[in-house]
Image (cartoon, rainbow, N blue to C red; front, side, top):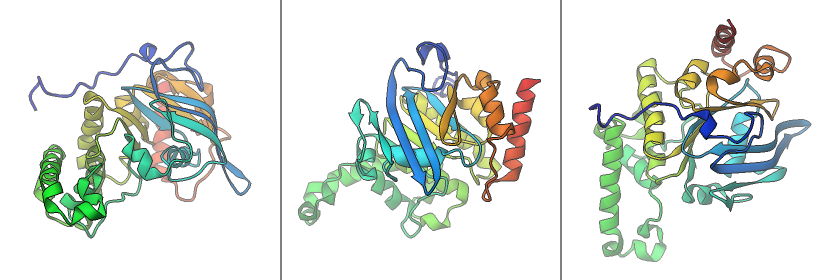
Length: 304
């Protein structure tokens, strides 16, 4: 990629993102997503208890915290894949409370999953075409009249090829998604999300299970989303990666927002140190002990 077209990875100034002190629930200058009083309880465990949080527009925000902090549950609530016990939230000023996931996606807020949801028995191209919104052929009556949707489908295919080429998956367009590697399925899921022309892209642990050879490619694509004018909110455990690409960091522990701020400064916050190294670090049977150990080292390095 030439220097004049390469995406910039220069972080946004945090002072341009928020109003007042960088603290839990602080106001943002131009929030794209605002949530109030969102709670979710499983049995006797309150997995999410978010009093107020705002996601800044045009920035890359990392949602971090120890295993069991409630990050993915919060993602599920905000995207319509789960229902809260209480709370409300808005996207672009429009209420999303109680809205099903497919309608949330149509409004421009899309997400990926820690465990990819690529449809393995469909080709890569078919997966991409599923991501295009507002397709005329989705109507039962219009579906039997090809002249109504043929031109639109050709345009969608051309757009899909363009995106797949950027993700270096164009040569796989006729392959079944099940034949792709774990990293390639992550790329496909992100590429498919772009077919809907989103405003906010939410990535749940995009680097989980990815071959190191594809890690830098995924990082570049995440940075490219911001370059193209999209807002990014992602869950991640790798602190080094968070410091590399995030403009803003939100920290969760025991379902609550305990800190917000600049990715370099927030790691020095006593609440964050306590969340990772102290009493709030609950064991998770599904946790990756290697990743957790690396995070502890990363935080300790920042304190030295």
